[in-house]
Every structure is written in structure tokens, then in C-alpha cells.
Length: 167
Image 1: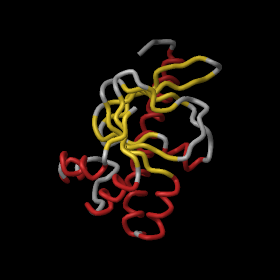
Image 2 (image 1 turned 90 degrees about the horizontal axis):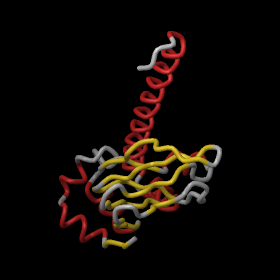
Image 3 (image 1 turned 135 degrees about the horizontal axis):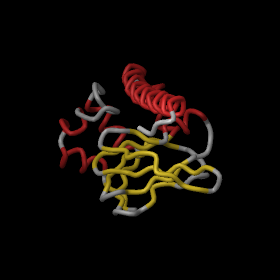
Image 4 (image 1 turned 135 degrees about the vertical axis):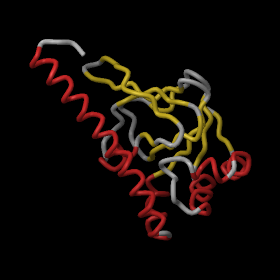
């Protein structure tokens, strides 16, 4: 895993790249730049692990480019959960929930992620409450979409079980 200069990344990709991302959408450019420069930007090669199930949580990540595969651990077995793509966050729920990571995130291709620590998150809340509110709204929307997807899966599985048919 290689660390990338956040300011250089901002200039090479351009503001529009970040404005189109669901997590950073509607945030002032100065706030996104601050998150990139005060936080860490990491480059992962295909197959490289970002974090593992059981790791302590001190931050969450936003996919800048590329794709991460999430594998959830249950009963000492791993199952593919989903891909996280450009603009999406991962690890926010664990950070807010104050629990260890339940999955392992692996780069499915060369991937860039911005790491936002819990300290950085708190500092944004204190120093830029309006921007913090927008970021929190974006993160909440993404969680709501995930809950909706899970709800749809549960309903489909319940219907299949009731009818005895596979979907």
C-alpha cells in the first residue's frame, strides 16, 4: 500500500471528479481538499488488503477510483458481500457503531482510497459544522441505500422460502 499526496491528487483529477462522488457531493472544494490533505490517500494494487475482519476501527474510507471487494466473516468463513466503487464509503458504520471491522476489504483492481480518521471527522464537526452536516447527510444517504438493498434481498428470500422457488 502506497501513500499518495492528497493535494497533488486533487490537482491531477480536478474538482469535478470529487464533486461527482456521492460521499463528497455538495461539499465545498476547500473541505474536500482539506480531507484529502489532512487525511491519508492510499493506493492499493489489485489483491492488496485495505483492512481485515477483527481490526480495530479508527477511520473510514472513500473510494476515489477503482474498486474494492468486501468479504464478510461469519462462523470463520468469508463470503463476498459487494463491491465498493468510486465515490462510495466503507467502514463508516463500524466507526460510528464503535465495533471492530466485520469484513475484509480487498482491492479488486488498482484502487485509490481517502482515509478519514475519527479525529479528522470530529475536527470537521467543530471547525466546519455546515460542511460536516453535508458530509453526514451524504453518508446517511449511502447507509439508507444499503438498508434498502438489504430489505429487498430479505423480502426476496422470504418470498422464495414461502413459495419454495429459487429466484
